[in-house]
Each structure stands twice: as C-alpha cells, then as structure tokens.
Amino acid sequence: MFRRLAAAVLLAWLPLAQAQLPEPVASKLAANNIAPDAISVLVLRGDAPLVSYLAERPMQPASTMKLVTTLVALETLGPVFRGRTELRATAPIIGNTLRGDLILRGGADADFSGEVLLNMLQALRNQGIERIAGNLVLDRSLFNPARNDVGIAPFDESPEAYYNVIPDALLINKNMVQLDMRSTGGKLQLAMQPALEKVVVDADMRLVDAECGKWEDGWKLPEALPAPDGKLKVMLHGTFPKNCARSYSINVVDRQDYLGRLFRASWRQLGGRFDGAVIDGVTPPESKILAEHASRALPEIVRDINKPSDNTLARTLFLSMGALEPDPVLGSRPLAASNDTTYTRADAAIRDWMRRHGINDAGLVMENGSGLSRLERISPAQLGGLLQAGLRSDWAPEFLASMPIVAVDGTMRRRLKDSIAAGRARMKTGTLSNVVAIAGYVRDMSGQQCVVVAMINSDLVKDGKGRIVLDTLVDWVAHQGSDGRVQ
Image 1 (cartoon, rainbow, N blue to C red):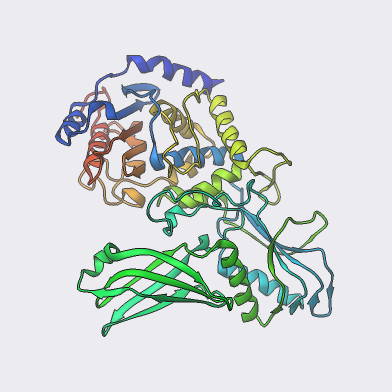
Image 2: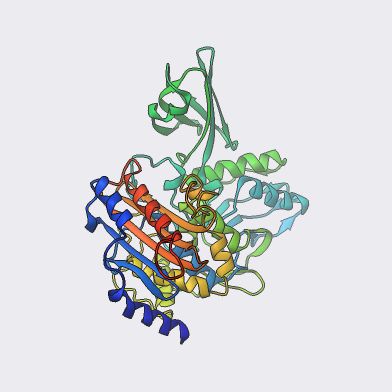
C-alpha cells in the first residue's frame, strides 16, 4: 500500500515540478544544436520532483532499459536464482557404454562455457562412460520459440559482434570464436579458440600501413564457409595493419554446428567415443541427470549485465522471467506448460510488477529487455518510479551494486572525472546511433539520494554531443543543496 501511495504522490507532483530544463543543461543543448524537445528529464529528491521536463513521454531508452529487466528479475526470481544446464539420459549404462542418446538440456545458464561442458563430460567419464551409442540431443525448448535468432534481420552492420548475439536456453560461450591476429614480417598469423572439430580460420586480409589501434577500420564481415568433407573455414576479410597484434571475438558459426563441434572435440579430448548425430529434441520426463551445472547467483549476473551493459545476458534474463520461477532448493524451475511465447510471459511479468508498484505501464514497449532495440519505449516517469522502488526493495544493495559508479567503473568509468559526482553517483548509460540516456542515483551536496533519468532521441547526439548534455545534468544534480538550490 505504501508503495502505491508513494507512486501516486509522485504522479500528482510531476506537473508541479520544474517544467524548464536547468540552465546549464539547456545551454549545452543549444551549443550542440540539439532541439529542446529531443530530451525528456525527471529528477527526484526523495518523493519530490526537482525537474519534470516532458517526463511522461515514452522515449527510446537504449541500455537504461536493462534497469527494468534486472530489478524486476531480482524481485520476482529472487537473489538465489540460478540458470542450469543438465546432461540427461533415459538409456542404461552397460559396461563403458551409454546405450542410447545423451541429452544436453538448456536452462538459461548464463555461465555455460566450454570449460563447464568439459567438466560435465568429465563427470560422465568418471561414471565409467567411454562410448555414447546414440545421438547428442540438444534441448533448447525452455524458451518458446527455441531459436529467437532464426529469421531475424541483423540489428546493424555488425551481426558478428558480441553485443548482437541473440540468446537461447542452451547458449555456450555466447557462441563466440576468439581470434588471435598477429602481423609480423609481412605475414598474418591466425589462431582461434575454443577448438571446434574440423574448424579452421583463414584470411584474405591485405596488410596495410595503418595504426594498430584503428585496425577495425579495415574490418569486413567474416564468413563461415562449409566444405563437402564436413570441415568449416572461418574466413576473415578486409585489411589489417602491419606489425599489429589484436584479439577479437566473433559470432559467425551457427550455434547448432558450434555446440556439436565443441562437444565432439571435448569428448574426444577426454578419450570418449561418439559416432552419432547432433540433433534437436525435447527431454523426456523420465530421463535421469548424469551431470549438471548451475550458474552464479542472480546478483552476480545482474552486476555483469549493468556494469558493462551486456545485451546478451540481459536478453537471457528477460526471457528467463518468462520461462523460469524460483525454486527454494535448485534456484530455478520451469514455469508450468503454456502455449504463450516466452516473450509474452516475460512482458506480462514486468507489467504485473509495475502495476503492483503503482507504475502506469501505458506506452511501455518491451522487445528484448536489453535496450538494443529501435522499438522499446519507456518514459522517464516510469523509469523514475522503478528507480524509487529499487531504493525500497529488499534487494536494493544488490541492485545498486550492479550499477556503474561515475568516474570509477563500468560504462561510466571515463565520465565526469572532474565533477563532484565522481564516486557519488551510480548511473546506467544507454547509447544507440540516435539515442543517449542515463538513469540512476546521484547523491547531492546534502547527502540526499536523488533519482535521475534523462533521454535524448536525436540524430545529433553523435560524437559525444548528447553525452555532454547528460553529464551536465548529473553534475547539476550533484551540486544541489539541502534547500534545493545549487551550491
């Protein structure tokens, strides 16, 4: 009841708050030729708004949307929530042979890696299993649809980049191949990891005289080229500077192929035998666990989402809210069967949470919960209400600890170093080609924790022009005194 009343008081106050932008912020907008109607701002001290400028207008939030996903997940899934990966089977183990299929069941395990897979397979070897006389069945059915990436147009011109990886319930190594590129003596040397069965890396890149630090200027979209003999060649294109060494990770191998080849290479490394195929499937209810892995607890995952602004982890967590619920023993368990898509259920979970906290969800648009979207919308008033709820949450320490500290770490580590906000503010950032945004908490001169949300939607925000406007706002709030005036 208290939370609903607090939200109602906030909404009643909004029209009475300062309807004009602070003068330093307005001046920076004008200096960078950004129209005043391109920005929406809400600043709250306690429950009293200091600034409400177009605050109820839905805007593109970019990665500040991750605050919605992470706080609602903490409150609905709980701090002991963990994603899980399981190796299961229905077939008996006779001698050194599993007489049937091995099932790899995905459970939105954010920490599922090649090392984890190797340890799980070692657990099979420890049980005396040397040969798998069946197929490897990959179960991604926790999410509906199981492959959200199929048929989706690339978000931008870099579909191979990590920030563009679309998750599924059985994503391993984020589906990334790490490249080591070194040019010495007029030759380009290449290496890749992890080792995938029958996968090599090659390049037709031309070596050029250029700065090593700007090597990406000559990068072209790589390809994964299959051969009739089952081999796969990762081919790199473009140019690369002479006398340069760089590491870069790419998502270019189909995830079904990636996991199958990684499994074969890892099982062979352990001395195992496998002659079956890698297929899709669903885990039979009568199957038994042979090996399992659980991710780190949710507060650690939330920190890894918000500090560096990890899109893939955020999207995984968003879908987890539509697929999993807390389990007091295991940390998570699948929701009851439903024909609804996982997205629909995740979206409903977030809206239900907002309504319970007295936050009007009208105009809210969720696409993937990460902000890497041209469709997602939220107003500063809605996000401000969520941040207020975050301060009152049982998991407020975990939530605040996940946010970048101004001038110290995460995506704010290089910003506002000369401001009194340095070390005193925790701000989530958001950036797209036409969006800059911030949302979080700023302690003012009196020690009062202020909620700050600001979004600029304009093609003119590039080259740091929008960022300086938002940094000016954060600095202005940090200078506020106990009487509401700038010190």
